[in-house]
Image (spheres, rainbow, N blue to C red):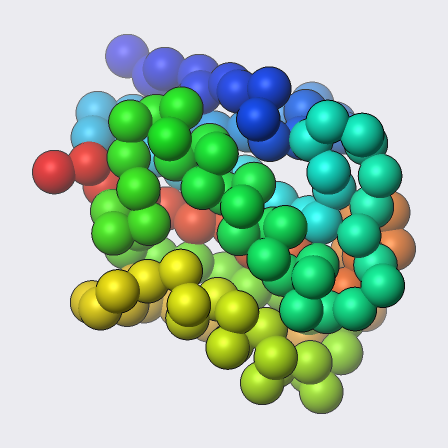
Length: 126
C-alpha cells in the first residue's frame, strides 16, 4: 500500500500531486522548486540561493519520511539555463557525504512559476 508523505516544512503542492509517495521502502519525491514553505515566496535572486532552498525542501520531505540525503538513489535536475550547471552542481553536491545518487541534468524551456531550477528525487530507506 502506498503512503502519502506530507510536511508543512516544505511547500504545499501547487497542483494535483503529493509532496512524496512511499511505496514499500521507496520514496518518490515530486519536483521541488525554490518556494519558501512558510512565506510562499519564490527565491529567484540567484541560482545558488534557489538551489539551496530546493535542497532544503527535499530534506524536509525526506525527514518527514524518516529518511535522509544518503537514502537518495536517483535524482533529476531541471534547469532553464545550462549555464547554471556549475553553481547548481556545487550546491547539490554539498548535501551528500559520498555515494552520490545516479542523476541526470536537463535543460528545459520553462519551469513552474518561472523558476530556473527544479529537482526531483527517488530514495530507498534501508
